Amino acid sequence: MSRITRRDLLKASLAAVPGAALARVGNGQQVASGSAYAGFPEPSRQWHGDSSVRAALRSGKVPAGSALGVVEQSLQQPAQELPRFDRRTGERIIPEGFARARASESAAALRATFPNLRRHFVFEYYPWYETNPYFHWSEKGSQPPYGIASTMMPALGPYHSMDMAVVEQHARWMADAGVGAIAISWWGQDSNTNRATPMIMDVMRAHDIHVTFHLEPYRPDRALFYTSDINYLLREYGERRRWDCFLLLDHGTGPATPVLKTFRTIVPLTSVDCLGVVRTVPDYTPDDVWKRQTDAVRENVRPLFERIVLLADSLDLGRTPAGGFDGIAIYDSFVRPSIWPRVATDFGANNLLYSFAVNCGFDSYVPVTPGGVCDVPQPFEPPVGPIDWWSAASRETAEAASRQRVLESLETTMQLQADPRRNNSARRFFLTYLTTFNEWHEGTSFEPAKHRSMLLPQERPFNYHNPENGAWRLELLRTLLRSVTSGR
Image (cartoon, rainbow, N blue to C red; front, side, top):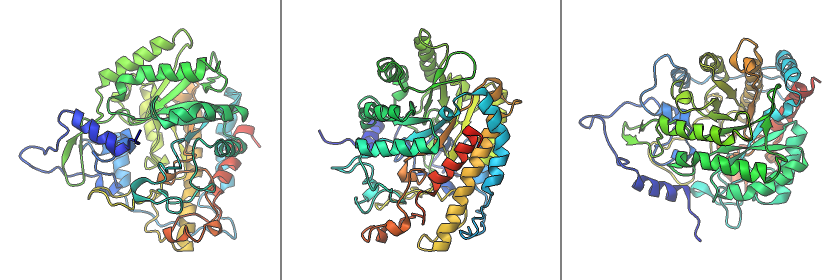
């Protein structure tokens, strides 16, 4: 059977969605869009990869003064030039010792509440890569094995997610870093990610790593299958395996519960591209549809669990509870840690949970095959101004910015979730996603990349962004998490 690509699925979905044709507001008047600066792609081309937050920013209807409005304003601010990272002295923008000291009080409070704190740090895990033929590595005109759809070459090269030796190495790296769980990017029962799951769980169990799921937008009407999908995941990978390594989050009191998050959950009805063209969003789902689904999930799991925690990747304070979600888990690295306190205050005041991801920023792959005029890659995050990736000095500046983001994001999410005055602490909920282990397209991976000196002659012409030490991200995370989870 021939492989169905994301673009094929999108073409089919657009044909099936009424009103998906191009439209303009009023009598052809174009609507100014404030999202082009963020590099968001034209919506009908890339809706699978767009988060709820990105989609909302392109709706043309961002409420003034809202948390989403604060995000929009932050994206319009000019990039800040950072001091050059000095490898000789080891100076950091935020000294690691200072960040660990600031986080120690929060960590002590969390360790006192949650006996197995490492389970509450969850790597986002993407088992969608294939070889023979290449899949994902070959996106957007890339030519593996030397030219891949990533800004960095992995230490393992372009691998197959069903290769047990690869997954074993991944599990060893995770366990050594002090991480106790992963969230599998799951694209439906007929997907390669689902076929890879049993083997992944077997390997993770052997390394004392538990598994949960990150439900992806595998079809425009996937909301209608939300209940059956969750029932399937709980039955197939929980009950049938006797819950051997399905992540059940310990809240410090009472029985543990499943926690599942959903990507691209709450999206607007229409979206405006950089030219002002308005289009119907193919997978828009009314809140009442989500509410019926989330209610059904809770009713179905009641015989097994006192509750289940369902998280959306949204900043919409009204629609998140209207859809029946317990809270939010923000994926996007452009929602910066400086904004998180505002988000935690707003959502906590409405008795909603929140989870902010430890991340190293964003470094998107630029497609070989050009897209539409609005397909502008999202800029490097954190913003540091122009980067010449051929230059060692520029690469070190980018590394310094990424180090800052890892430290700042860990410190901020721990403080917000451990603060006894805030909602998460009051509800005894702590969960931190680590974004990501191996999303190589977006440059967010903590999985080790090749050391720059180890790049092959055939790989060097592609100007990969590999740093001198390709493992620095995981090494830094290991240092920080060991301090947090053990107090040493």
